[in-house]
Length: 237
Image 1 (tube, rainbow, N blue to C red):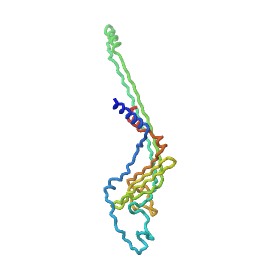
Image 2 (tube, rainbow, N blue to C red):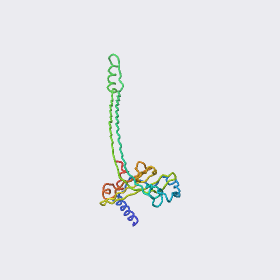
Image 3 (cartoon, rainbow, N blue to C red):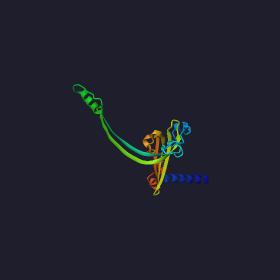
Image 4 (tube, helix red, strand yellow):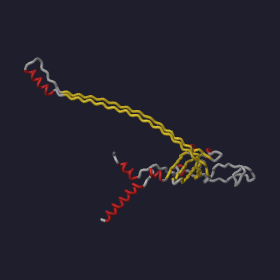
């Protein structure tokens, strides 16, 4: 008996937990693409430079390239994404049907007994039925959406691929007035796309993954709990 009571209490606790916690539906997996993991890293090469030259990549050369070029170097990513979608559709359906059913009619020429018999038979057999139906459907839909997201975030070179491309990953978290904002980006870039100011536009990132999320009281108050979502997913009405 106690096992049944314990099971009932546990079920009530799980139901209460489902009605009081929130989960985010959309998720992004920031694991590197398979080819990034399978491609061997670029083997480090010894720096060839003239110690007495003004140009080079030594400890403190007078003139050098300030762009990110080694693992753990930082590159600034300029995120400038514009999303514009527009669609419209029209559908019209029309159908008309008509059915008519009549009973047999007996005729007899002349008059007399046969004509009277035919008339009496027609009263019983001349039964008609008529069905008319008409259906029509006219639907029109229009959708238009415009979004713009612009910001910058610093990313770190995680791996230099064998062909010289970089796999980068950057994350930024801010806590403002009790609301936590998370920005996460990853992808593969080419060294040639990095500007002289060590910046790269997000449009040049291959396999780009960008996450912008806000956590806090406002998000919790605007989300449905997973218990409600589970009921709605199986509720047929």
